[in-house]
Length: 155
Image (cartoon, rainbow, N blue to C red; front, side, top):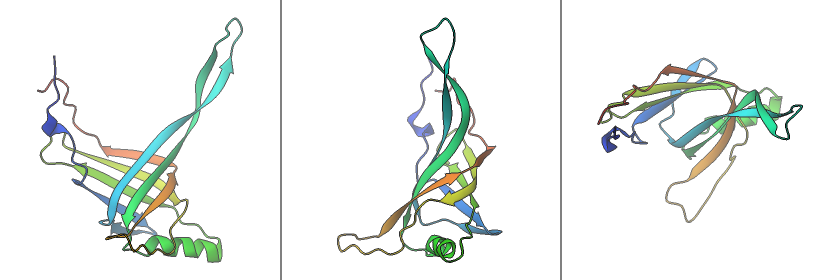
């Protein structure tokens, strides 16, 4: 029986995120957390001779959220530009998980066509030692540039 070693889990702080916006690549060192999910859209399919409603994949959607320390105006500026001009910004985010203590190595995933849903335009909080903001987004493609190594059978 194989058992995964605890040391092969990935530490959440061991990685990087870069955004490529209008041809400029910026390190997103202010990210507290980021989670992007690809979800299948499924259609109900009824067939003769069966009372069961089956499911068939009929597309997908990419959604996510990122929580940032409130230290950059870049996303507020993007939203302001959309408000003022109607021109929206789509950009890419490359996320690298790289925990040197883990035998799985690193993984590089690029979210393509990221588009912000809502942005905090101003914030104050007398109870907060460090302001942050949560930004939901969508994306329309994804690329796994480098997958984790398979550790099956180790341990």
